[in-house]
Length: 156
Image 1 (cartoon, rainbow, N blue to C red):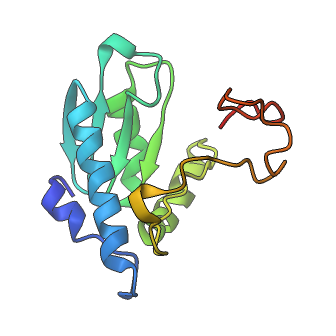
Image 2: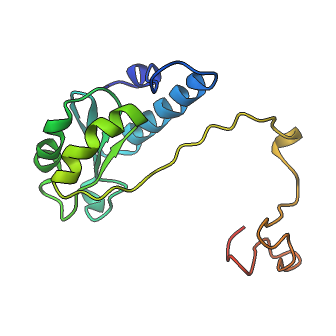
């Protein structure tokens, strides 16, 4: 997919109750990556997001596959579009496309890493949530009063 409109039509297999929200999340990821990139280079099924100012950043220089593509061509396409960089990163949105692209990328020396996109389907608390956040692993026991962080995990 080379446009955000095409990305919004993307689904994984059969339509399910959350397919529309998942497609919306995928479309957002694709569109956000395009807007953030200093430049993009389209290819069938996706694009390269590039920013020479941050040449060492995989988050700013990678391929994003957000639609049907030719999986066997993906490693060569990555080399062509990312060959000027000291690293290679390829993100594939969607289970079906991801499974199709995995084997050629593995054979080309890529190691799998999972980026999990979760769509919240439960009720949203009034005003976006509780005013006080509680660390579930420690149930708030190690939270310093007013510090806003959990000493055990070092994050909120």
